[in-house]
Length: 277
Length: 169
Image 1 (cartoon, rainbow over the protein chains, first blue to last red):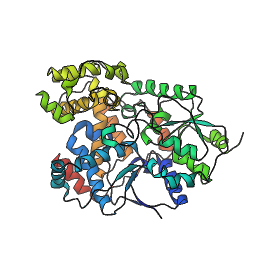
Image 2 (cartoon, chains in turn red, orange; image 1 turned 180 degrees about the horizontal axis):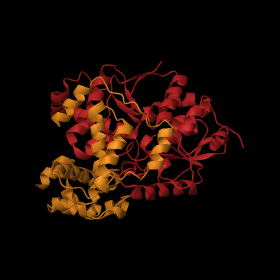
Image 3 (cartoon, chains in turn yellow, brown; image 1 turned 120 degrees about the vertical axis):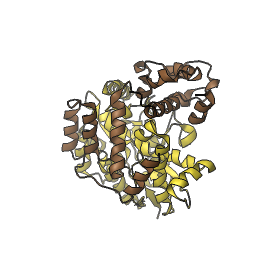
Image 4 (cartoon, rainbow over the protein chains, first blue to last red; image 1 turned 120 degrees about the horizontal axis):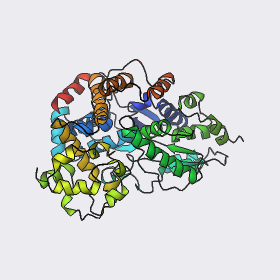
């Protein structure tokens, strides 16, 4: 049985409850055992790096240190958390910076690998397992990655920032068609959502219009900030899902309480994805 | 500040810029900036840091890194903007987009208090700082009613370690 270390971050217990709950349901179904990082803290999101560089490294570094006792790879569902944790990991890989970090946090025994949650599901064996649960629907969706899972490329070395594929591959495995569209990693302005919503509304409108034009009935994302922002700042109701919710539907383990958490009610489309008319 | 210092802090060589303006063309929010991304690079080279620290640009930049990933010389304007924000805050320069600083301060205070973010009290502090109590009120209420904003805060066990990190920074 595969074992992972899991860093939910603040949102998966609050504003992105449905992401957290669907992730855990899917992990359970697949028989993947997870352990949260012991006594984890907030990674600082966009705020620490905006005001103080050292703080933006030390906060996620403490999580890496606490995770290192578990001896498993860390999987991170939130794009912002993943991005910040990778920056701290790169700092730890530099001897001089590591010394400075250890001055503050004490010695690191080891430095675990850090992956975005999607990476867990694009593993060949898991993709094969996923493809045993096939959706029969003509609903099409636009996969949306946002910024922080793919850029900066040299730090993350995750996937191609211009044409990321992981979410598409996961959704296609369970039989959901994804459209080709150009804004997969276009910024939604999430970090500005509360500070200047006038900027953000323009970005969100552009993203949703492009998705519709490409023939999508919904957007599927993996980032809690993108999901909340796309729901909050849109004009006409357009459902925004987490990819783990779609996996839940395919496996037949979806839960009514996920849909109730959405600001834009996706239930009509959920029944279409399940094969209804 | 010397160019070499900006290079060191941002991990790149800004002197490689040949003003192709791809950064400005590709930036999703350049329409909302008072100093366009290519000019940010030019001004950093020319030492006009004071203008940058007082600009709207550094607070409107979302740090999406599209500029950096598409620049033919691997220069990220986002990294310069981030560094300028840090400098502006350190030098107590009043921000051109005050709510952007307000949300960061409210957010960091929440981490300092609990170790993780407690949205309800963080949003209350943000509202007190901006003194704008009306915008997004309906949205906030809707999220609260959906149980997306927990009432009770949770404090991590290692909170003293977090407090020490904040003191050391």
